[in-house]
Length: 115
Length: 154
Image (tube, rainbow over all chains, first blue to last red; front, top):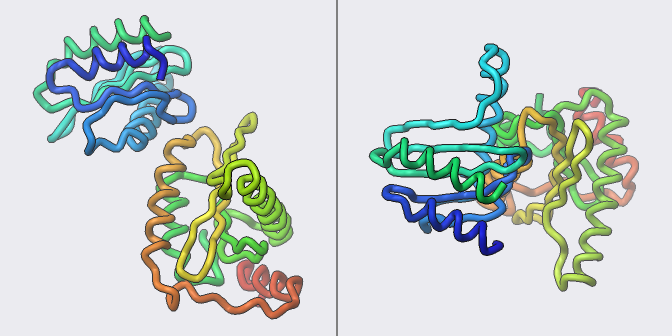
């Protein structure tokens, strides 16, 4: 993992409630770099989060809503956030009470730093 | 529809195909003998693919031994519209090779994830459960019989 990417993921992972920060390739769902809690399957997170993002992108295009840039999914026990630029996807897995606004802004900033 | 000559592969392969959303899948022995297939409509295609996969596996295994000290693991090739994923699984009775062909309805990450589940379910089977008919010594006859069974001509 190169230093800027490690620093970027480290910044995201240090935010309150974040359990994993992953940089992955959007097209094939493979993780390029990961900072995660030990019980998080980062490979699965990267695979499913990017697949979900791709499906959402297609749905939004079909509905005429244009390009998708950010995805937020809330579940009973956690939240997943995905933001992309080109073939880079940043994925954050967080606790249910994590601050979505702060995470979204931080992810956009992080993406600008690495893309 | 998944068809096999090894009933213990029916459920794991069917689940893999459904969950990973691959178009085509073949499970075979390293010798090239087909064990199960999903998505193929012509026996000739399966025969050709099994021969190619067996050859690729033999090359990658030996190349891995020489360059890496042990056989190489999964292999992935991406084409313009379709991709292939090939990987071995060690089961109680030997090695099973899986080849999956997929397009942009899924991704390598998803296919790899569900391959892990497929491999895990096979590793949990006993030697008796994964026992196969022995190769008779006449490879072509074995291959022809297996293909006939898979395509409903036996």
